[in-house]
Image (cartoon, rainbow, N blue to C red; front, side, top):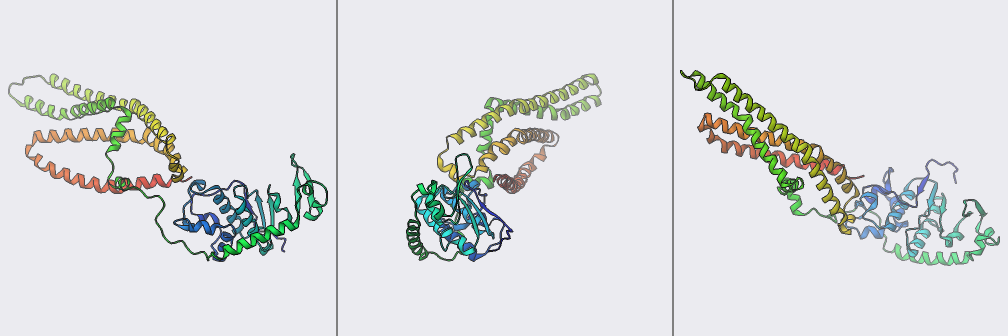
Amino acid sequence: MSTHVSRIAYCDQTPFLSNSTIRDNILGFSAFHASRYTEVINATLLKIDFENLAQGDETNIGSNGITLSGGQKQRISLARALYLQSNLLFFDDVFSGLDADTEEQVFSRVFGPGGVIQRRQATAVLCTHSVRHLPFADHIIVLGGDGTVVEQGSFDQLASGGNYVHSLGLSKMAGAASDSEDSAAEDNLKAVELPVKAAPAAAPTFEVPKSLASARQLGDWTVYKHYFKAMGFFLAGSLLWWTALYGFFYNFPTVWLKYWSADVESVHPVHSSDYYTGIYALLQALALVSLVLLGWLIWVTAIRKSGANLHSDALRTLVGAPLRFFTRTDQGVVTNLFSQDLNLVDTELPNALLNALINIAMALGQAAVIVTASPYIAISYPFLLALMWAIQKFYLRTSRQLRILDLETKSPL
């Protein structure tokens, strides 16, 4: 066996899994080799699990393998260490999450005579509390409670030494008998083992409801109701009131200029220029006051109330969610909800609401002013509204989904 070590494989007691497919977690950064891949998944009994998953090894496991059991996560982590091209492997109590029968079979296929480690002529360091596997070790190191070495050597030496290993009452014959039973069970499993192929495309275990899929494309008007309810309907009504006042005070000066110019050009003016100037200045001042109050209500009051209520609603819903929600929902989605989503509610949404209200007030006011000057132009309003509706429908249908995709891509941790 070569003493050169180019790579070291390590499998921790607590599996580390990325938010991707099972195959990607096993391959890591290595290239795919069908024979080696088949060898490691058969050795770790993952082939049986693949047959019970709708998408096989192409199943996405979520953050930290949220969709898998503890034993499955441990065996995937073990398979990843075995798949790496390495002749030195470290395993830290990798059987702690497996039941007794699975542990025996995996140990036999990986560490036992004729197992993966022996066939590769590799060196494996196994830290374990499963003392029944000691007869198969080439060298045993027993650690005390303080971390010091109590005894070390081959199994034959330690079994006859009268210390800890001797007190366990293990024998190589018992190990050989256990190995024979495992070999028989392995032969039965080999009868159903098949070469690993790419998993066929299948429907995911969790499908997006049709109502939600439609809302992603067309939007959901109940969102506005939910937002206004979070800030309070009285506050929402106040926003609409000050928006209407701003629209009036912003656009009425144009009408006032018409009265002013008509009176000035008449032979006998009804009011002086100071009168019209004062009223004009008052309208502009009231427009400014309305805008300031509208901004104050949104940036000071609405942000505080809506942010607090939406956060409380989300937290209350999360705490009361059933277990199936946590097994089907990625941790990144939940984290993203309480970080980026609520941050958008407190930063970008108020600014967007203020701009929307101002533009709506200005547009409606200007439409009314234009009608007072030329009533026939109102005939074009329905056509303009239809054109704007078609444009916004096309724009929102694409921009909304791009925005949702942007949020979803930031969800995985």
